[in-house]
Image (cartoon, rainbow, N blue to C red; front, side, top):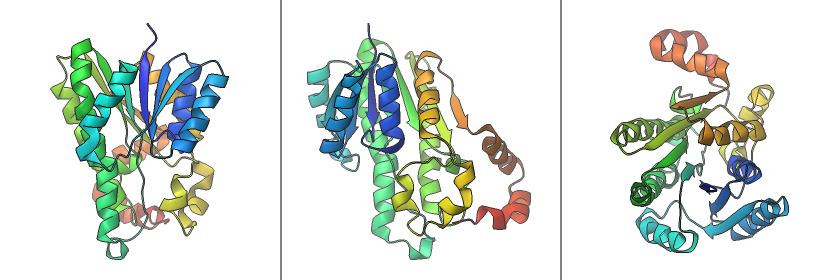
Length: 258
């Protein structure tokens, strides 16, 4: 049977590429995002390449409505084999400059919405006796940097949730994976880095969204606990976890590129 893959934040960036790749691999793709027009365009693109896609508007900031929305979607599509929690955004500002409303919005979408959606789909996975949850976190969840402390906090939370959930579901035949990419060439930075300084400083290291999407979709057939991209950046994160004081002392100015 063809697996049904739900992708949040599918209307642009990494989510768009993940959905396209999943369609090309023969999966039935459920497209979830707020922008109905862009979802329709993506649906037509996937179907034009011979794939199968269904689109639904979903606002990740409305956690209280998640259970009802998932029920409505399940009534129409009938199945969820894989949930790819991709939706999220960041704003690169120092804490004293960041409005509380923005902080709340980041946590609402990146963390609370992600957890609420996951919670809402779990009963359906339990009924099927199987499932796979893939959470798109970030290298920022392992190594925080100046001007992204709030965004990094949300990704720390996603990683904490992912690791705890994996252990909770160990006897349920449900796989839980984390994807931790570094900066990717997507419209994410249109909002996150409005001054353009970060993109200017890291452009040569930015990841190709298609390559990240392909690696993410490969997890469906070859699951693993964690996918880290690129590997050299993950090595830096590991070194920081072992010797945080030394890294902050030596690389502090280099990390402050925003």
